[in-house]
Length: 148
Image (cartoon, rainbow, N blue to C red; front, side):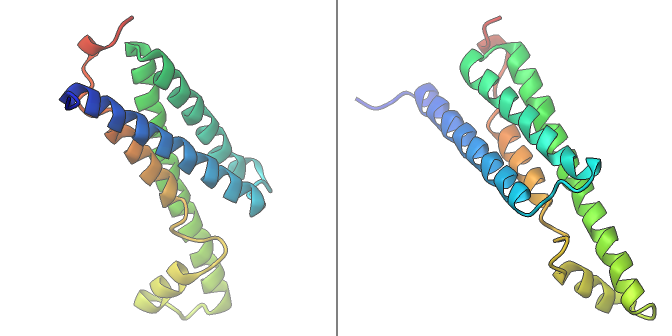
């Protein structure tokens, strides 16, 4: 007997949530191993990931309107933190490159900044991608389908 569309969608949502949790765990481990805890600003990703993970577990088990709302909010926060981190990393790399060569500019500066290893300018974008994955997992969830 074939699975119903509702059953298939529920399975896909659970798999997306599992991918999200594994992605956040991996990103958190990578940040820790790279020593991303030198000052309070570098601890922000850890806090956002912890909040998002807790919200994900709560939503995964409770499936209530409140859990869905907090989960969506935490995913938006993850996206904002990722975008902000990318801007901060880019600026730090740009400042460093301009200290090394104040005459650099334009495309040469952009490419040098984007290819820098520390801090990796685009790495925080991973957090934004995880947030987007979490939001996608909630697409089509109506308040009517949640028990309160």
